[in-house]
Length: 433
Image (cartoon, rainbow, N blue to C red; front, side, top):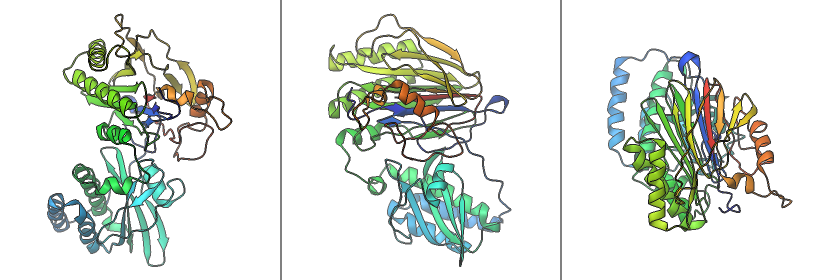
């Protein structure tokens, strides 16, 4: 593993907060993170129900929505301006978070107001993005409203608009921002426009590959939420993650391929691809590991390997099963304290042909979090040259990164700029590498 690249997957909170009710009034939270990759989850209350909207306005809105889905990406700005105009909306800005999640960056386009990116930790746009709530700032000609763009729990960005007042227009405005978020996600798949906006530094080819195979960085449904991030965003190589929710079962994998650069990225991509293939034919953890092992060994030979942490969480019962294939030991966090390291029988890394696979099992209690991480997190060196270490890292997670009402990218004595936005849930799982 390349500690200099600090490639680590952490199920720690990137910067998203999601509400995920679960049985008995709690939430499950899965956080994935790494110095090279990170996934985080957070919970936030929803805004109150909006006021009544007449059928005529809804009909006009529906027509505009249909037209929006058929429009090319570069016409998103004019469409939003046209829809928001009848509400008195003006000075519209659409902000997309950069890959490092440090800056909300204005998207260009006709009808949109651009400007300089603002720090995510110290701006009204950043507050809306981090908290998943609208932020209102009064000004002489009305109110400047910062509206989080959410799509399936994923924080896509922020839309900013100046209104005379919100009042009875709030319900329609909520539908508009839902449409904008949906169009950004949909159109993102067939244009480079939004990639270019979000890219604030040169990106390596290895990182380009990794970003292209990731699932959405966040997912939120009534019983469970997942979120993650890649860090360092522009130079990640061998670290990656994947997840899927099938029925009541949440599947998660965090991998760390040996080496660095394109070789590591290629191996990690094959590992994730083989994991998805095995998972989608509905086989168990043992069979998934065996399939991944054969694939990596067959493609790269006996001297290459991938460490992996594979987990399955039953969101109805809180029962957690996992396989540790040469990965650092996960942490069980309750409240803001690490109460246990999830030591278990480990098998050989993927590619080395572990024969006696051991599946570990645990029932999570309400509010629990599980943090999994790759070795890049603990092998990173501080400014004085000393290795960061597992103990120092653990202190960072439970103190500076402890769950709270909001968490920004503030300076901290640990090597990853991600922050943990936890969920007060009945059972929470946080994976980090």
